[in-house]
Length: 287
Image (cartoon, rainbow, N blue to C red; front, side, top):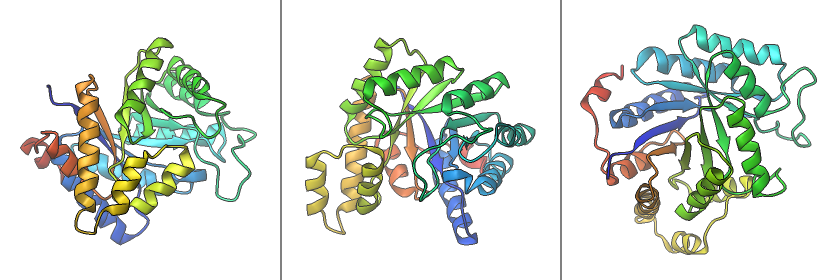
């Protein structure tokens, strides 16, 4: 089986200590040789400057290709495109275009009166400006969607608008992604769809994440974590993610996207379990 390509998602640090943690995260994972890394964008643009600073720092101080997340929540079209242009000026041409979550306390998503309607509109504008655009995908029904077919239709519209690839929300069973991939092919989607992998670093937190985005947690996984001890929980998390990734690779998946939560150890261990050994050249590129 050929070695898969990988990518890693980070979030921007909000303190000096968090900045050091992000640097440690990059130094831990860069030797694996990711195709790219991405930096998230807070709800309502709350981390706009932090995201920009993190993206440009990674671009300027490492040999990694970096993608900047960009949303259209609470921003005009002009403001959003000006942010994109600052990335281009810094040498970053890959953007992960997302509608974005509404600010906390708001009554659902509402487009800005002078802003983009959503991810399709944003994707089209970025692609027209020559950006390499990645979009999000939901292998399980998005909380705002009527059904899974609507999710697939929405993804196809984003691909048709100029997106190069899609990254899925996390899931906990390989078949969840594989069924979604097959349905996307049946719908005429030919762009790569990268499975989003979330190694379970914090079981309590993951359950909250899953509930918020409509991700099903198999009962067998709930039972396993309920019975896990402090000494075995990391082994369980590594084994679960590794086995799921191995099943994906067996079915022809050739790229894995990891949500690291800026805690790289489990992601590193999963990659190593899958045979992705460190690359000396990649390590030397990290400042």
